[in-house]
Image (cartoon, rainbow, N blue to C red; front, side, top):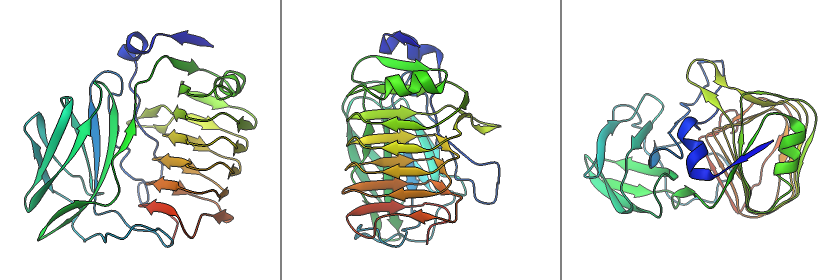
Length: 267
């Protein structure tokens, strides 16, 4: 396992999100050059899954929604409701839609944000507060299951999974851990865990990871976005699941105190 200083190492890698080979259910990966340029992934009018405690409703238009901002190039959503805005400045950024605007604060350069909004004929409003993926120190690059296990045993870790097959089971006991998988525009998710994943630490965030085994979460404040899971039992308070794919037949997610948005194969 190699440990590099955060700002230097991320100049050579693109961290994005996971996808599926089935174009019929694949969410746009919403990739961004995390660590190279400040980016925001905008998700417009997501499906609100059953059990979500969000109170703001989505509308129907997702495709071809123009989003402008004074600090970065304009973007238009794709057919799945996603636009990626790159090059945002620090401070308050206002996102202008045809019928209104909404804003969020960029805390530090080269960070990544997920911004989820409801867009209607009468305006635009954020469904949840922006999800921030902060720069907070060194990033740990891993190549196999042993290195991954060691990395996620440390609190406040930021972990990047290089492309590859991660054989065996993974346990995550630490708190405040962020795990990024590698995503390829043509091939989809390239960071694949073959075994089970058990999350016991709190405030663990996963983005762009495929898990072929059973995923179990016991810690509070777990979140996953743009990931692909098989069977899963997601429990704990303050759960957030955004734009994941669940392929298994044995999937349990919270029915309260949870954000459940745009997850495929969940009701």
